[in-house]
Length: 329
Image 1: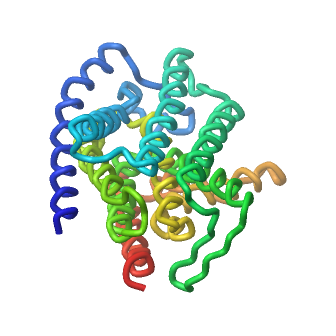
Image 2: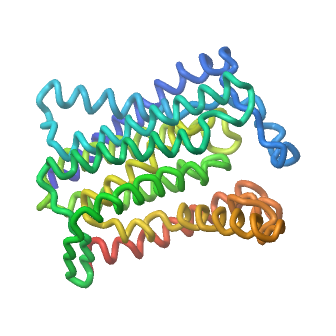
């Protein structure tokens, strides 16, 4: 019960500070004209978003990191190895996204970091995270809780971690295309992972990690105030890469990597449809879907707000199913 109260307080503080950061940061980004050029495929439907600033991920990243530092410095919480891994992933992937966003604005086009450069940096961070993971005394186990299966896969687990982190970070990045879509789905997914984490008493530092998660949830709620339709700011790669990596590392630490497919079902759907579209077009020069990521296809047949609501509901439903497996079953 005490942990639950601490998490609620952390969420409230995250919400409060993110609103303050947003109020001060938004006019600065507007004055600096920190907006990115829209894709030619979206100019017809998203023409009103051409001057909306990006890098909005700072609105929830800065309060979360600052609050965690305050808690550690004042000895309210202990900086465990596993908490360090979470924060390292959160900040590290945010920096990659920040570089990408800056280059997009600097070049005045949609080409920031090349795909190869971005992938290399993501993989490099993932290697460091795997090293920290093993140094912390964690075993390379593929753990299926529902079936009671623990499978030691040795060095292959390192490749598995690389796959989880790169996939999850890019999946959230692909989903960030409509006002409030990625932020809302991330809140749902993080809340699910937060509940699961509070139940993992065997994980060293699980209480501190839970506080980190709920601080981030509150900060995301504050960001959503500015990002909900009509969006005043976009999170950009700065926010989306950090959120995806955080979801990935939480799944790894709590040994619910496979459950992440349900928790982030919409993110998975967005990614798979993009891959299918790309591969199919490469071999046939035809498209299966009118547009990808798939939310843009839905947008052709219904208003943007309705698409976001539907995707939120799908994300909530699959997360509830994931909780059945992650907590009760």
